[in-house]
Each structure stands twice: as structure tokens, then as C-alpha cells.
Length: 255
Length: 246
Image (spheres, helix red, strand yellow):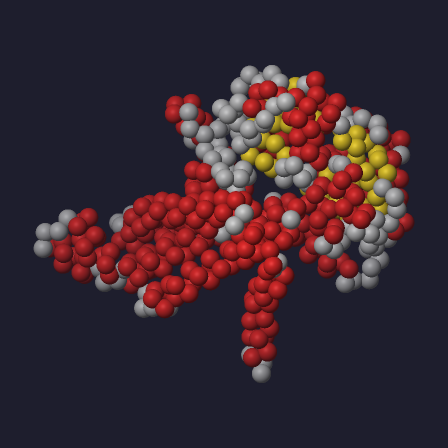
């Protein structure tokens, strides 16, 4: 009993708000609201940005995870801790940091602006960067864990047989850690989809350009609470859909 | 960010209510454009009333009205426009008739040096210029809409912010070339931001109402703060910041 009661309270604490959302949803007008251009626009933008951010994370994060797990770098523990900082950092702080580095007058941003005429804040590219910044540690941690669990001797064997490092990684290592990569990718994508703080701070808010679903939910709450509920239900369904589609195959699999 | 601040505030005040109830907290929800003036007036009020602790929640008037409607623990509400106050009045949230205590008008704000060479409202239609505006549901956004309608300009903002201070920050950082904010905000930003007047500014005048709230924990204290804002001292602080008399 000493364990069951708090467990039930914990379960209710997690589930009741979601049920409440469904109870309060304006089911009668739901289809009309779902088909409204503003919801479609926000949903499309969210899916596109989260997917692009995930691609960025894969391209940069998998090699980074490999470096952390296998690379011969000094101070690896410190490096690993630094990589996970965005994981525990409040996303708003990440947004502020991005603004001061990549903004038009930022450390790096001023040169992007002066040399290439590129200004990232208030653009869809800015949303992708903000999401990637917040989501990448999820992928790196997941892939690094898989790499460390995998036996490096297979790679070494491939190397002794004449495979280059890249070939060994691609043909031997990657297939063996695939479940970890997939789980990390899903986590990363879900985190990017829900990103709010860094996005609104760094990329601002403009419908069709930077207003992703979480921003739309927050903004709609002020003017049209019913619309906020509809948007929330959509995000809830997308989240549950992702979990349901991937759970049996990968997340609870032998990764 | 303001939402986070509110969450912290809710936690703090929520814990307070479970105590004896004898604490001297006065919670004031005020429009973001009142940040500097009300912070000063709050310090005055604390000095004149020992034991009273004035806590502010500054934000977009529409968000504040929404929060009050949802039961946020507020004693006084000061809005940047009558429409947002009306929302609270209609819900039976006020303890007395709101009174207008100040007026404000918009100015074009550009970063120091005016890098994009902004001269008037017509530049807000330029797709190449980076523009920040307030969202239409907050009073500064509603005022901006009136200005653009009067000028016959279709503004092309790059970002639409939830309160005027968020817009001002984008100008201060130089991330946008121009924005419409209150005259008082330009003044509060000091040398980082330059204000440019425009002929349609008369159309952007907002009247600020204030009212003690029905759920105030100490009705007399809430009324006293409203009186303090309307006192000679209150008017002087507001006038110094660039507010017009009501």
C-alpha cells in the first residue's frame, strides 16, 4: 500500500491533465478548426522544422557521439558534460545565447550579416537552429550510449582487414548501433517538435514563418482558448501517434 | 519568459496564502509599458507603508487580463487600454469602477544610428527592413494597427511580440531595424534607441485604466495603491517618464 497509493497519485497526476484537455475540447467545432488555414500552417511549419532540425542533429550529432565514445580526445569527460548542457539548460536561456551569438549584432552573426547578408533571427532557419540546439543532446547521448555498449573489436577487425575508418563506421558500427540511433532520432524529433522557449526567444513569432505549434498554443490561449485546446489536442495526438508507431519496434526494443 | 515569471509568482503567492494571511504582500498586474514607472511607485508605496511588499507582474495587457480571469492572485490591475480592462470588468473581477490615470502614444523606435535609414511609417511596408510589432490583441498592437490604417500602409513585420517590452528589446539588441513602441519606452531605453515621431501618432493614443480587484486579499491596501498612482507624486513620476495626463 505504501507504494501503490503514491504510484496511483503519480499516474493520475500525469494523466488527468491530458484527459481534462480532451474533456474541454470543443468537439463540435473541432473539424472546422482543424481545417482552418492557421492551424494547418502552424502544423506544417512544426513538422518541417522539427524534421529539418533532426536532420541537422543526425549529420552533426552522430559523428559527435562517435568522437565522444571512440575518439582519442583529451578531457573527454568534460567534453561529454558540455555537450549535455543544452539538455538541462532552460530552453529560454538557449534562445538568449543563440541571439547573442547568431543575432545580427552577435559574435558570429554580425559577420554572417556583413559578409553574406544572412540574418537568422525571425526566420524559419532560425527556428530550425533553435530546435536543433535544444534537441541534439538527446541524439548524442542516445547514440553515444549505443556506441559504448557496442563491441569495438568488430571495428578493429574491419580495420585490420583494410577498411578505412569511414567504411568501418558505415558498414560495421552503424548497423550495430542502429536501434540506438533510431531511438535517439525519435526523441530528438519529439523534443524539436515541442520546442518553445528557445524558438520564441531567438526566432520570434510570425505566422507561417516562425509560429510553430507550441507558440500557436501559447498565443491562442490569450485570445481564443478554444483554439489553444484544439492545437494542444493535435500536438497530443501527434505525440501519442509517434509513441504508438515506434514503441514496439524500437523504443522498448533491445537498444 | 513572463509566463515563467508568473509561474514563479503563483508558487510564491500560493504558498503565502496558506499562512496566517497577515503578510503585507500587494500583487499588482500592470501593462509592460508601466514597468519603470510602477516599479518606482511601488518602492514609494513600500516606503510609505512599512511591512507592505509590492510584487509586480508586468506583461501584455491581454495576457494579464486572461490570467486574472483564470484566477491569478492579483490585487490591482493596470491595463494599457480600456478593452483589456473591460474584459476583467465584464467578468466581475474589479472591486471598483476603473479610472484612467495616464495616456500614452506610439513612436517609431530604431536602434541608435538608425542603420536602415527609417524615416516614417511607409518604411514598415519594406520587405527588406526587419520590423517588430506588438500583437494586435495587446494595446500597443491595436494602436499600431490604427496608425497603419490612418497612414494607408500595409506593415510587413518579421516578428509579432506579446508585449511592448519584448518589441523594444529587439530594437535595443539591433535585431530589427524599426518597431512601433510607446513614447515612454523609447525614453526608458536611453541612448540605445532613437524615437521618430509620425503624423498619425494622434491616432495611437491609449488611455490607461487602473482598478482594485474583487479578489484582492486586502481591499483597503489595493485601493490605497490605486490612490497612490493617482496622487500628485504618481502623476509626477508618470509625467517624467513621458506619459500624458489622462
